[in-house]
Image (cartoon, rainbow, N blue to C red; front, side):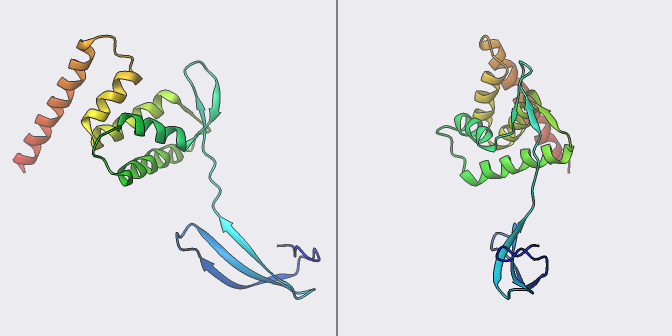
Length: 161
């Protein structure tokens, strides 16, 4: 690390501490040439993939855009903000785990639907109706029937054990 005062490469770390959130390290350094002290911060740099939209255009992954999707679906639903934050973390981790440079918007939508399905069924149906462009009441009925089937099979599994 170069000294910001004199530009020499001869600096040493005299103290390192992890910040309260645990996501960065603060280092106090001392220049061997001019004896001045300075602080550096070390954080992980994550490169999230580009989002490929349905029309083929690409844009940067924006966590805030996902938050808006969750917020709209969960409008006036009794779901704590912490749950939304955890769901956003899950989606982000899934994207990072893929290790790909691009992710299709459709895949992102499916991940959001999966999280909403576990969080709140009404929000899931709201999101699905827009995301899958429901055209009539039958589309809603199909999704509700699927949810009912899943609930029945989950109930059976819990009583079998």
